[in-house]
Image (tube, rainbow, N blue to C red; front, side, top):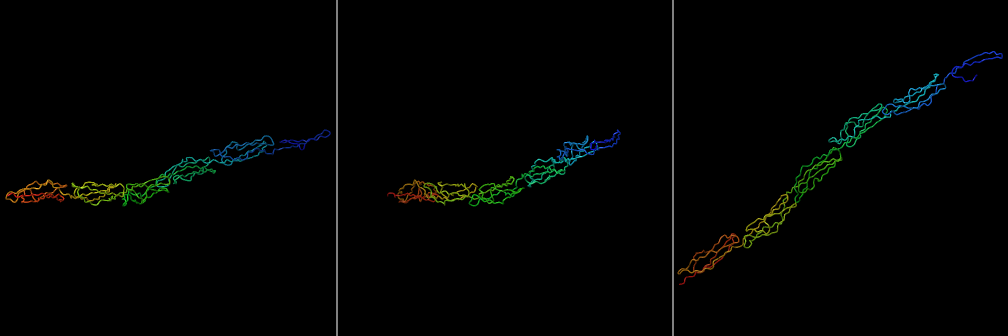
Length: 443
């Protein structure tokens, strides 16, 4: 009847008219129910955004499969991608299609986006490099083998902030390589370059060895020279010495050392010698005046005494020697007494005085004859007398013995004085006498 529900397909509806006599008439029409309703898809995944699988430029996507339902019978559900499929970098549309047996279909889609979040890889980077400075420079030219870069997708560039073969300053410099891929992922890798200053400073203009003499009256001398200079491959050098030009130097050899030290602990030194020579002779003070002495009694000499002089020198250690000392015995005559002062450098001075010993002692006459008495022969007015000459002695040397008469001389009657004269080498004269008496013979 009108309002009934009809199944899918064609249904024949027949009307029958029956009268009271049993006569009937039938009349039919068809009702066709068509399925015009598309299936429904439920449980459709939301859009997926995935990071690439490690080392890959893609990613496997997993999702829960959606379901299809329909107002009529069975449906089929198909997709252009299945859960677990590998998706390329970028955006991929996944479409599910539900179809029923009546040819109705519906589609539903979601987006799978694969992002490249994996940075490039840099390989072959040098380990830390340590270099000495280039000679004469405060830097070093450093080269190394270039590293390489790879990427899971597409690499755009590999560069660094310093190129191999560049000049690097003293100290530590970080060299950084940067790799960039097509997705904008950046990888950096660094190594360190250490440039060490191993070059010592240079000292120029070091003086040659100096020889100077002591200042008058001093045992030292001021040494002067042109100061040397220090230079270094890097800035910052301290320059010092243990002596400066104009300093006073003691007697002998002194080593003057200059030392240069740079800020990096490198040092160098250079030396020369300053030799102070003592060419000043000592002086002698308190020297006695010339002395005049008489011989000591009975001696041909005399002992002389005096206050010894003293030696003075600009340096310590002068010695004083003499060829005669106070209390020595000096012979008759002139003797030069010389004092010599010698210092430790071999300088010497001499000064002398004279000691004159005079022989003032007269000779001695001994064994002088006694007075002699003789008698002249009868008729004679004189006669000869004889005697032995006396002896002489002297503290030095007798030069002569003389008399006014000689033994055997003829003496007149009466008394005659005979005198002997003894003379020494100094001219001292001694005299002695005796008498000769000549008596006249008896008649």
